[in-house]
Length: 343
Image (cartoon, rainbow, N blue to C red; front, side):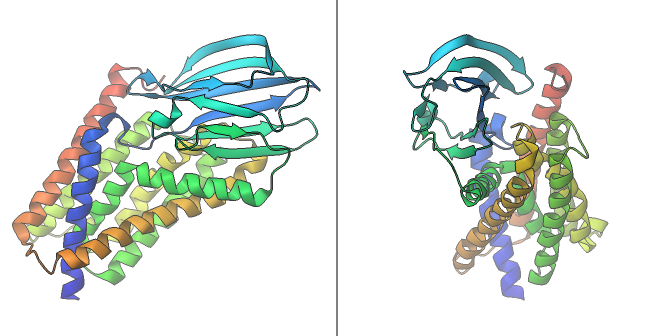
């Protein structure tokens, strides 16, 4: 038991170091990196409506240009309008021989860490979707697609969402400052998982809605609170968080679920795909979360054999987490009250 406690201490220190470096490198994207979205809807035998939505990064449009095949012609030239956190572009094209087999390119995507979620809807009911990665910044429109292929795409989206969701990872790391027993760790992570799955489902189906910017600010404040509780624990004090960390993990997990839902609801996905997308996106989130925990525990198990970690180091780690979370909270509150984040 003592060995596991030392391993947890080393693990959370490693997690704090990694996430802190990423948080300082990418402060404006400290929550999740939201994907771009391309939707193509067939309106008649020759015409298609194009919806191209790109996220804003530090207030600037994503430097990616949509390049359609040379064989299509524009019936309505691109028209843009700003949305909270993104730019929406609409156009109408004519494709006499359908789009199946044609290649759509995303110029500049290879220089980013953002994915593009693509959806194609035909009049005869056929659908296709895919996640385009920076490593292969193009999409060849298929004639048809299996549901398992769609499910696998959302699974990968969930994994990437949590691994790039630095604040969610830092929250998990902050819980590890308090939890020193593997049984309690299992309870705590399970409570967090159940809670964010509940609100992820409710928000994705539109049953409950909260604006994104306040949720992101509260997520940062939740990390700050747990970090403060970790300092109290090192001082020998008691509290609800210290005694029953799984209860607090469940409460804040409900909040984090709304943050996870932002990656899906912002894409405007058709309702017929939501059950499948929700299930596999959530599975992907859990795979990413458990991978993060397993990785830092595996590395820390070896590291603890070399280093001796005492109380001052644990307190320093808690202050490090709190400092990063406080920075994110101030940044996000500033965006809400001084940059029109609620509009």
